[in-house]
Length: 464
Ligand code: 4AD
Ligand code: MG
Image (tube, rainbow, N blue to C red):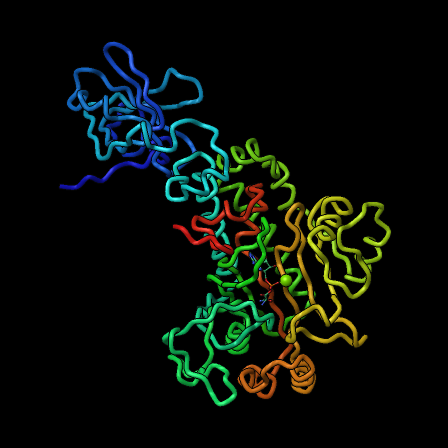
C-alpha cells in the first residue's frame, strides 16, 4: 500500500473544487466546536498552511484529541473554496489518520514568537516554524538558481576535493584530517609531527577553497564553477562567520578582472530576480519579520548596476568620514566590516565592488599590478553584511608567481603543480568565491549567519 500524498503547495496552486486530495503534515493549530474541528496543517512545501475540517462522523475523529500542535497527520478529503480570509481552499476531511503525537507538555514549538537564539538550540525542530520554513526554501531556490545561472552560460560544474594538502588562502586556518593515533603521534628527529606516517603521507586538512584545483580545471575546460562545502578554523564568533560554509567559485580562462567583476555582478543580480520569481511568499514574510530588503528593493537590485571603487579611493572616502571607527583606517590596512558597511550603508546605499587592494593584505595568487603595490583583486560588499564575494585575476606569469610564493614564505614544493599551470599554456584567468550563506543572509534579511544554514558550525558549536 502506498501512502503518497499531495503537497500543500500543489494543492493550493492547482487544486479544483471537489477534487479529492491526500495531505500529510504537522498540525500548526487545532480549534474545536461541538460537532467538528479545524486542523491547520503545514507540510514544509510552502509558506501557507491548509485548513482541514474534521467532522465528527468521519473515520479517525476519535484521534482528534491526540492531534495537538506538532503532531503529524494524514488527511484524505475533498477540496472546497474556503470561507475564511487569506485562504483559497480548505479540505473537508473524509478520513483522519495520526502518525505521531507531540506531547504539549514538552513540544517546544507551542506558541508563536520564540527568539532566534532559542530556536538555534532546537535546530532539529526549527524548520517547522514560518521563519525557518522560509529560509530553507529560499536557500534551496538560490542553490538551484546558482546552477541555472552557470549552466545557461556554459560553465561546467567541477567537483574539487574536500580533503587537500594545499592551503589556498595561506592563512593557516585549517582543520587537520588525520588517522594518526592522537595518543601516539609519530615525531621526527626535530620533534615535529611526522606526517609521512599519516594516512595520506602528508599533512592533510579540510579545504578552505576549491580555487587552486578550480584553476586547473578552467585551464582545460575554459569556464567552470565549484559549489561545495569549505572549512575555516577561524576563531571568529561573529554574525557573518561559520567554520563550515558553502562556497561558489567560478573560474574563467581567458578573462581579466573586468570580466570577473561583470560575472560577479551578473550572478548577484540574477539571483535577486530568481529569488523573487521562485520565493515571493517567503521573501515578503521575511521582509515583514526581519526588515531586510523589501521584495521591491530586491527587484530593483536585480535591475541596477553596482557601484565600483578602487581600494585607494575607498580609503580616502573612509578617512573623510565623520564617524569614529573602532579600527582606524589608512592605506595598507585591511578593511574591517565596520569600514565595509560604512561604504555600502552610508556612501553607496547599496552594494559596491572594491578593486585593486594592497598586495600585502591579499593572497599569493592574485595578479600583481604594474604599480608594484596592489593586486588585481575585487571584493563585492553588501549592505549590513560587508564582503559577500572575494575574487581576483590570477597571476599567470611564472616568474612573478614563484617570486611571490617565495616572498610570502609559502611551501613552493607543495604548490609545484599549481605553478606548473604557468609553465604549460598559461593564460590570463580570473575567478571569485561567493559565500553562499552570505547571499542567503543578504536576501533573507537574517541578521545572523547561523540562521541561514540548517546545522551551523562555529567555535564551540557542533550540536545537531
Ligand atoms: O575571500 P575568500 O577567503 O576567498 C577565497 O577563498 C578565494 N579562494 C575565492 C576565489 O577567488 N575563488 O572567501 C570568499 C567568500 C567571502 O567573500 C565570503 O563571502 C565567504 O567566502 N566566506 C565566508 N562565509 C562564511 N563564513 C566564513 N568564515 C567565510 N569566509 C569566507
Ligand atoms: Mg576575502
